[in-house]
Image (tube, rainbow, N blue to C red; front, side):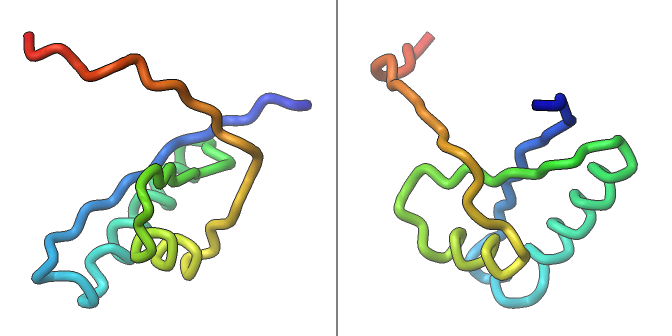
Length: 79
């Protein structure tokens, strides 16, 4: 395995602006910024059953890659 730069992306678009190309513009800008910084892999972690997010990223060419394992440590403190 050869090391390579990776980055996580997460886009949020207000409900009233979905379907206007805002998410696609954000994604394109993030991909360009990542490429300029030598990032080879961009991943979108979608942890909740979010069919809209899966559809959005899939339509932009994202697909499954590897396995992500996680373990919850309880609720965050209110500090």
